[in-house]
Image (cartoon, rainbow, N blue to C red):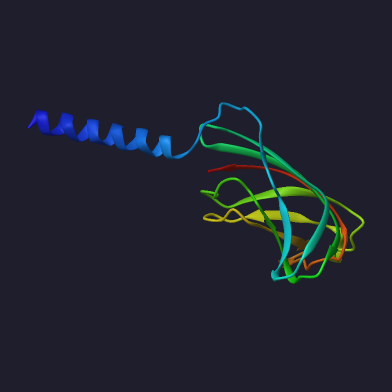
Length: 148
């Protein structure tokens, strides 16, 4: 019986090791990614800056991006795409904006579990936040920390 238990424990250890191997660990070395700004209704976005860098260690991703666009023909709710890995859990993150007129003037980002595309919301007092809609031009900077 003890042999069966030992084999079972070893199989569990192997499965954990395989799970870690499925999540790249680049040891904190910065890598580039290409962030995107799109709407839920497709269109074309003209960028002057699309800069993203991330690190990952032990499955924890730190991604920062700057997106400057001068023309967006899409519409609907904003999606920030191009994140390097899918999130394991929901996470909110701060967003800095310039040259945009989002409702309420307040912006927060949300990355939901199972996605590599984030949403932008405007928080409301005593109510659910409102998803922000595509602006023709502007600047967004963000830093997000999440578990891949």
